[in-house]
Image 1 (cartoon, helix red, strand yellow):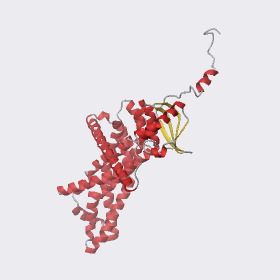
Image 2 (cartoon, rainbow, N blue to C red):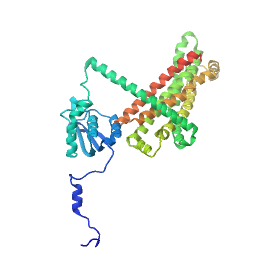
Image 3 (cartoon, rainbow, N blue to C red):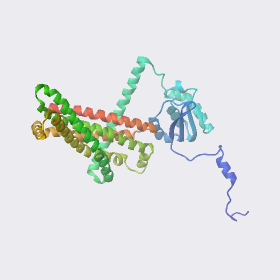
Image 4 (tube, rainbow, N blue to C red):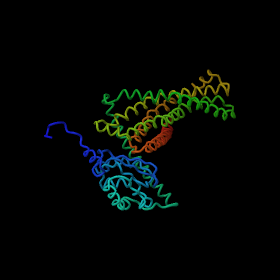
Length: 402
């Protein structure tokens, strides 16, 4: 048929050639990894390009690394070079536990060239960046403690750097309010403040009840039951109200921040924000931090009032102290300074809880398990920092005579 005489018909040979295993090349993709259970133990399934150009993303995947794999499935790998292959073997655990994987690591699927490359790189991965067999017994404990200490110092260093980054972003927001995402700020105020009022109010009330009951039980021995009111007022306003509220917020809102941002990191949404030329700190961190700095003082005030009310109820039931007598004694026991000592801690606690939650979310690795680990770390670190700062404030106020 002459050229141009009619529409070009579909050639079945084209389809056959395209689907042949020798010439079929999937579309270029970002590197991904997931773990499943296979016949050889833990099975590492990888996809996309494992090349030098993707090392940054591969390094993020390694942060969520699982125990050593017994099998690697490279059926969906679109490209691989020596650097990507070494990183893949390191992800499979060859570099850290060569004695567990050497000679027993099965490679399934994929192109023959990729399998040959991994086979060639296997000795290099075990020797190059691998470590010796870990010692057991007491030496193993010392080694584990040393690794944990070094990791803690590195994480503390990264957290300090992130605090500096957030401080710079906060200064930019103060001088350029148009940078603030006001809709997100209001939404987070509702979620971290209004939605948390029931649990904060209930626990604040119970803390007041417990303080009044325990204090009355001891003070009754000296005939000083009336000073139970002083104990409840000073204890709740200076320490228990803010400390209890901050711990609740660290477990509730701090973990939520980590899970939300961690999921966005896992789904590459944070990378998309950077690709658009936007700053993830401005977009994700600032609304959450400022919202928490607004709501935590308000929640603390609410917890203080509920704690004092709980103490009043228990004083009435256990000590037969009327409400009028209770609040009259409370007025002589506390001052404005007593109230401000607790309230001044709230914005600082809020900022640290939000920063830690967002920090852990942004450093999540490329696996679902990494999100869970980061959420756990966020809660633990948040509660630890809150208690540490509260102790430092107590020492400082004691020195100042407040």
